[in-house]
Image 1 (spheres, rainbow, N blue to C red):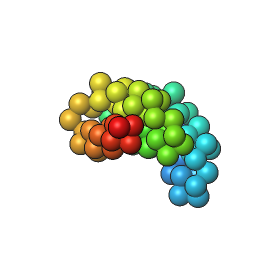
Image 2 (image 1 turned 180 degrees about the vertical axis):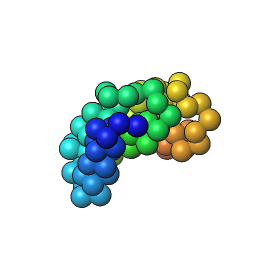
Image 3 (image 1 turned 90 degrees about the horizontal axis):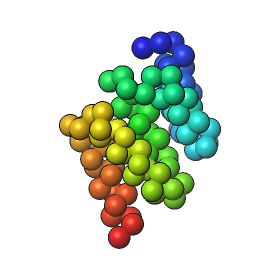
Image 4 (image 1 turned 30 degrees about the vertical axis):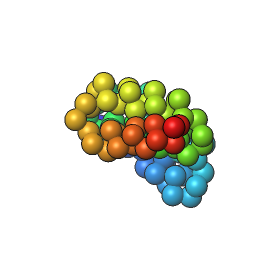
Length: 90
């Protein structure tokens, strides 16, 4: 994992904790842009989908869950988040 990927993920976590959701979203996207397919990318995928859902951008959140599940089909926290988003839509 490159230093830049780690930096973007840490910045995203800090922004998320501070409720700066748009900044957190950008940081997690920057991390994914650098290396979207690596195993450790599950965290930014999950956080990105979570933030999008919190912002009411449910379709984008579901799309992000779908991208994550195509890479990590056995990740329960992505399945759980997707189910919660779908429940919000119904």
